[in-house]
Length: 393
Ligand SMILES: *Cc1c(COP(=O)(O)O)cnc(C)c1O
Image (cartoon, rainbow, N blue to C red; front, side, top):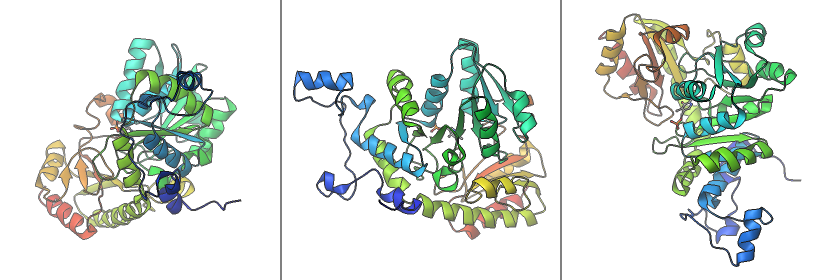
């Protein structure tokens, strides 16, 4: 039996065999919308599902399939599925798991557009949701309702960088037969693998660390083969948020360097946290890889390292937070994360502007909170820029 290979090897080789493609080292791009059948009968067999093979790119494409097999292998899951954006993935999963009058239990603090989707599902289809901090067994148990159809967790939580103990959530969910979905975007498959803790579906915005170069919008999910097949044949096929073969190819390319990039993101973030701690304009820092963080123990349990995202509060108000951003020269003011470039944003007026002020403050998103996606530049240059801007507020 083949010995199970390490993550760093699987990410370069799994799901592709060059001998099947004229020895082409890099997978080809199947830039085609449809596939011709040799006979009418073959077309009939393919549509009946009696014969494997491609039909039409919305239903499957070899380049996209390669990416799907690779992400499944990296997340230790049976199957993977690709989408045209992270939100296409999130919506396909939530719609597939719920029906009218169901309830979705979410971690307190979800991605802004996921929050928007939940509200829309409530208003249009009567699928309700509620939020829980999920920091203790009691907090999770008291939030579950008889009609809870799925538990949806983001960890680390955006942008407060609190963690949720996946093993604890799964334990409680399994007692009640409720599927657990984890948005693993912030960790990437290199830092955290929720399937290993018994989670049912993992979602990624591949736009972030997986693509890693700020040039693709995409989403990926993994889970059990029958769950993934069901989503492929319903909410992906019929709602149609598919990924293009070219974008799948860019992701296969970007993904190969994920472990190398991610270690550098983490190294840089750790250095920046050390410097921020010494700065007089900083009120508090949120980084799960910091030994002083309340999330550190859970980080050790379920993540390889603390990741590339840091949030911090400055001693100041909204105007000073905006001035800090405006004084930066190297660091770019932008939402998104996981790119080579260091990016900074102001959650209260950007990523979380749609969240009502009251919910925002419950989540700890105050006007003096800043989120930094630490890039791959020299950490000294990143710090020099941040330091000079902090000194001007
Ligand atoms: C960006 C992001 C999404 C949405 O992904 P898109 O690719 O922009 O559609 C979902 N969840 C998290 C945590 C994200 O950061």
